[in-house]
Every structure is written in structure tokens, then in C-alpha cells.
Length: 611
Image: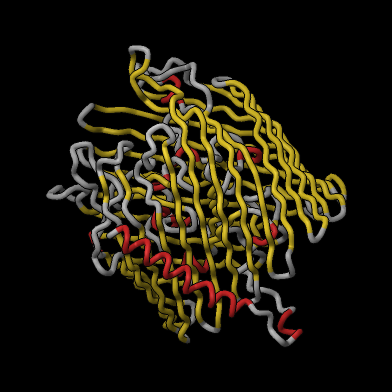
């Protein structure tokens, strides 16, 4: 895609959208209509941004919520497909169907962002990042994307933002089954089944899914590279008469992915148990014990290798109410362990942290202040904090400003990988300033944010002092602007995201590798009785595969289409056509100069039973 064309297109979209937003935002003349509550999807409850339930306009943060209806409509094959082009989010993939994917939030590295599943963190302790490509979107009910630093709430790596996935929770009532069968291009097969219900204060949800595909070549002239994933989920909770609650969660994904020159058997797993009690009318206390695993066995040209990592965490969180104000305070202990065919100098480390956050409401002014102290066995002590202020200009518009710090912990590879690790590394540190404004109306919202993030002591593998190893050498400055909007008008559901990012290496002045600087996503859906029709348009400009900005990867525009039919009570069918115009999409390149190929046009059809 030509950069000038992309720039003009994005600018035209923004200028065209603003008058429509202003016109739609005018308060209705009917006072009764003016007080009608906004649709939940336009101003959803968010818990990730502040560790407490807040509507999107109350979070004082840049947030995006992808609810159950969105996930069902779009039917994404992978988590990467779901996140691609969302406000402030960029995705780079080494092919389709279970191939390595990096998720960049506000231009930061993939390992500078946190992935949570029901509050349990999932990542590889060796690489430092999450294996986004191995999670089946059908296992989740909703996703919250919080952009901006959250180190003072979640600790290491929450530099660019946090993505939290929520699993479904059963409801009181008779068992509710749901079954889905489908398949399509590349000899792809998809199956899933679930059962949910509850009685006497006990709620349960059990689900399983299977995804299997022959895949497609990841380079020109190559062989098909397959992928399979079998996932299971169990969630159980019980509420007592005194409002106390206990619960357990277990999620496991296991499968195999083929790549150019080898294959990997993988396991992604989270498990946790929690208990929550009302200590008093104004004090609730929650203790969560959890474990996450990222395991891979790889066979390639270098031989057979094993990288298994485990993180165990105990988190104690307390919420105290003081009228309209809240205080959240707690402590956290975590331990990382590594078992590998590579001989690391250290195979475990622990981290102890305490944190506190005040949520203050002096309407029309609101304030959120947080502070966290981390003491890590490997890289020492870090203190992070944030301050956000909000001002309600009127009942429709909220102005916000924030400043926050965060840090990215050196991974086990950075510190201890044989021959390349450096145990003297410091954590990367960052500081972010943000200014935003949100308009929230009965049938429409829009959100505009501008920010700057400065990152010091970036870790890079380079030649220094006569050896090639990991060193703290680089600095980065990332500036950006994000405009998002959504509307529900009659039977139409509209979502739009426009992102400009300038992720710059301060030493060279180059753009950070594999990031686009301009992105547009538009989702349009329409209900037509028993039918539904929709589509998504994702457009991004060029990016560079390398830090020297010599290997340019062309921009692209991709159209995805979808249709649904409720052909009988409890029965429905869906058709999705990904990359309907069969455009070439390349976001990464091999070391030898060949492009990684993503899937061309692909069609999938499925039949569903259940609500």
C-alpha cells in the first residue's frame, strides 16, 4: 500500500467521521430519552484498568472491550485475528495458523505487554513474552485491552498495556449446552462444546474445543505447515449466604505447529483457586493462588530442544470503600522456574511486591493514584507509580490526563542463556504521559487520546566490550494518537479505530522493527431478522523488518466478511470469509530475505446449537 495513499485515506476517514460524531452526539430533545441508559456494549464495565469495576468512561484510561457478541459475530480463528487493528494494537505474524505472533501495544515490544486470563498471568519466562498464537478465542467470553502503563498494578512488563481474557461463568438455572461444528479452507476442522449452569449458589462452566488444519506454506514454494490445538476449560464457583465466594479455574491448550524447518509441541496452561470474603460492609478481601505454564518441545535443524517455564503466584487483594471513594491494596509473591535442554546458570527466581491504589471521586473531578514496590531476586528493586485525573466537562464528555511509570523485567534468556546472557542487566524503565477526551452518549461513543512513552535501558543483543551478549544500550521514544468510536443505531453495530504511532529508536532515529505507523479498522454489522451480515476492513501502511529500516514490508488492506442465519430455535449457521479480496499480507521476513506468507482468501462455515 502506498504510504501517501494510506495517509490521505486515514486523514479523510478521520475528517469525515468527526462531523457525523458531533451530529450524533447532540443531546436528544426529549428529556426522558436523554436519561435512557447507554447500551452496555457502548459503555461497558471494565475491571482491568483500575482493579475495580468501572464503566469505560470512568476508568480514566484508554480501553477497548470486545464482548461476547463481538466474538460470536466475528468468529476469529486466532487471538491474533481478534486483536489485529484494534485501537493502538499492531500484530506481526510469521505465517497463519499457530505461527509465532507478536502483539505490539502502542509501539512497545510484545514482551512489554501483559496477558492475563481471569487475572492469572501467562507468559514464557525464557522469552519474556506470551504465546498469543496458541490460545483459542472460543474459550473466552470477552477481552479487555487497556493501553498505557499498568506497572503500578501488575508489576513487570506492563509498559505498553494489558490484555485480559475472561472465561465464561455459569449462571443459576438448568444446564445450558452449546455445540459447534465447522470447517473450511486448508482442510480446516473446528469443533467445540460447552455446558453451563448453576444451582444453590454453585455455578459451573465446562468446555472443550478442537482446531485442526493442514495450513498453508509460510514461504513462497514451500510445503503446507499444519497446526492443531485441543483446549479444555473448567470453571467452578460457589457463593455463600454471607456473600463470601470460592472458585477454581483450569484452562489447558495442547497441540502442534509446523514451521519452516521443524515443528513444536506446545502446552499453554493456567490454573487457580480463589477465596473472597466480606470482612465488613466496606472491606472485601480476596486471595488467589495460581500457576501458569508455557511449555514447548521443538525439533528443527539444530536438534531437539525443551523450554518449559512455570510461574506460581499468590496474590492478596483488598478493596475498602469510603463513601464514594475506594482504596485497593495488596501484596503479591511469584516464583518463576525453568526446565530446559539449555543449561541456564539460574533456573528460578522470585518476586515480592506490595501495591496500593486510591480511587477518588470529587465530582466533577476524579483522581486515581497508585504505587507499587517490587523486589526481584534476579534484577533488584523497582518502584512504579501512576496518577490519573479526570474532569467531567458535562454529562457526556470527560477530559483525562495521566502519567505513569513501568518496567520490563529481563527474561531468563536475557540474563542466563548460555553464551549470550548477562546477569548484570537492569530492568528497562519507562515513563508515559497521556491526554484524552471521551464522548459518551446513548447510542454512540468516541475517544481521542494522545501520548508519549520514553523507554530507557532497552535490552539488546550486541557486540560490546569484546563479547556478543545482552546489554542495556538503547532508548526509545514512542508518540501516538488514537481515535476510536462506536455506535448502535437501529439494527446497525459500528466500530472504528484510527491509530497513528511513531515508535522511534532514539540512537538511530529509525522506526522500531515490524511496526506499522498508521492503522485503520472498521467493523460494520447489521441484523436482518433471522439473518445477520457484517464485515471488517483492516488497513495498515508499510513497516520495516529490521532495526536499520532497510527491509521494507508493504502495507496492506484486508476485508473480512461474515454472515449468520438463525434457521431454527437454538440453531444457527455462520459463514466467514477471511481476506475476501485475496490480498497479500506480509508483516515479517525470514533472515534470508523471503517474506513470511499469511493466508490468502479463506472461507469457513459452521453450525451451532445452543443459546
